Amino acid sequence: MGASVIGLLYPGEMGVALATMLRPRAGRVITTLRGRGPATAQRCRRAELTVVDSLRDVVEQSDVVLSVVPPAAAEEVAGAYCELAADSPPGALYVDANSIRPALARELSRRMTGCGRGFVDAAVNGLAANAAASGTLFLSGPRAAE
Image (cartoon, rainbow, N blue to C red; front, top):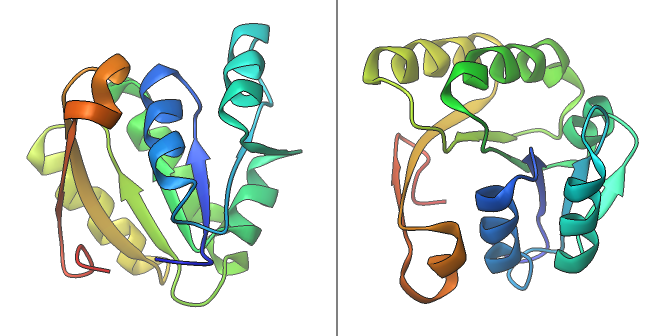
């Protein structure tokens, strides 16, 4: 993966745990704090994530965008990404690491394909506090091996 920019939507406890594991392998891990609270900002500082001003900045700069949000927000976050996807780097990839039902994962995959971007469905097995030591990230989709 080296020298990629990974965008994180959004930096909750699990998102930051995943970003912390990915940061040494990526060029940068970026996020936005727009609409987020002080606890999230503090987590990002501790994890040494690069904070940019907006979702648009995350999309424009990220080769891979990792969505780690509550399941109820997954479709909205994917839709917001898709609206901006034309401004993402060529070959950009959207990874949904949310606990969503299979039918929604298939729908999000179709939407990402429709907006010209790749889609990978991901599942995290383990607790955020133990992610580095014992967590497993399962990936599926045509670009999962990238």
